[in-house]
Image (cartoon, rainbow, N blue to C red; front, top):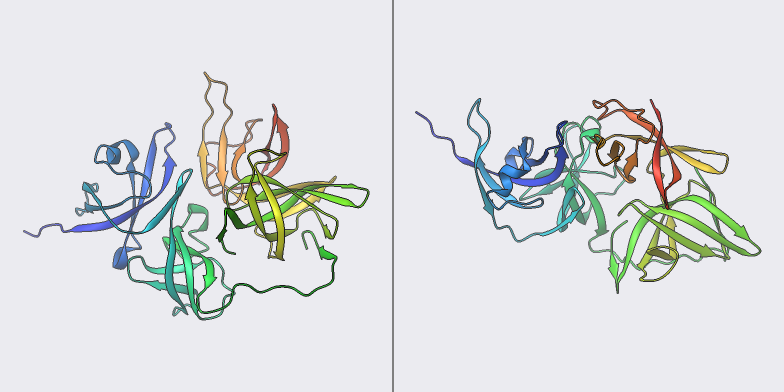
Length: 326
């Protein structure tokens, strides 16, 4: 009789069952990186396993995964909300037989590059689990990676353009520099007063609001860019954009309606409302994070569906709200 050998996994993200219970999606390492399983979070917590941990488990044929054991891997893991990522990995970029740009890694196997416009080279990357809404787009690959920087090239490039920088509306790294971070953001509203432009931003990397004031930048609503952001203890917003770096490709589809931005996004996760506490249903999407379904427009089985969303004032705060189910 054959015995089941242990396999190794990464607890990549937290999801929610329809009854409100949580699970971890564990994804295989190396040669089994095409395998993933849902395991109740409470069951893994009993074994001392948290989101972002590595573990071994037995995968019996036709039976549930079992025999979970936490493993010590010396990787820099960042847990942000319900998602975990592995930072500062070095990998060579190449094209696979389907012509898709992938990174070859020793521990995680083949990892799809989120950007498909990179040149073949060696990069420092951040690896994460592929989201359900991305699996078809990513050919079922369970891991993907964002580029932090190209290895062996100077990252201190500067622009010698004119003093006025014009960024059209709808038409990369996460580098830490003395407490500042390079992140991707877009303009969702703006105010022009005399010679000063104030832009209200949404930061895609950490799903936070920000403000950018400038006399020399003319940015349209829906303009995506990379900038340097600094966390402030006091101010109109927690994050302040201190420098505009460069325009980037738009990360989401959208339109400007009556000076407001309306975005089209795919749902990664659905959380039902709390009838007792009065909390409305909410969904989670890439780049925006939490979106409130305050008019109960969505069915419970809406994961993978597309919606439209706008920013509205809800109570004392501005939040993304579902406007239409597509």
